[in-house]
Image (tube, rainbow, N blue to C red; front, side, top):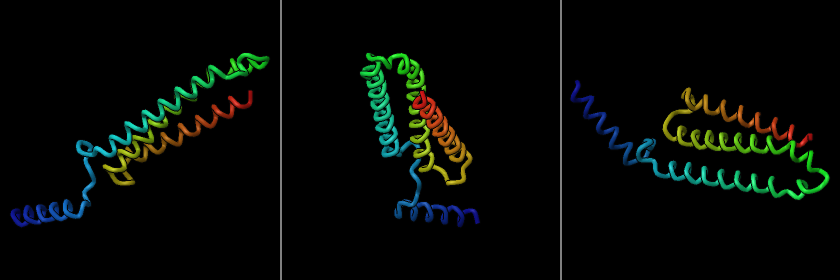
Length: 130
């Protein structure tokens, strides 16, 4: 019986490889790791742009300086939240390729993403109210 099980397992594995139905593992999934790296680079570039724009905003040199200075701490907070959000989204993409939809790790990452999105929206509303 054990030999029949081994033979059946080998046949199943061979079929899955031929049909490309096996999920890639973390060690050999180059496309996902490239996507994560590019996403992180893009997020960092956008964050740098946002920081430069907030520093060079012409309103900082006019009568609205007090109002914009109050926003500067929030802008760094927004940048940090965006970086965390991008990291979580990239991790969700990576985990989705490895586990099923009901995996607790994937569920927790999605909850974290929603929480970060809510935090970002709240901070953005606060920043635009001033």
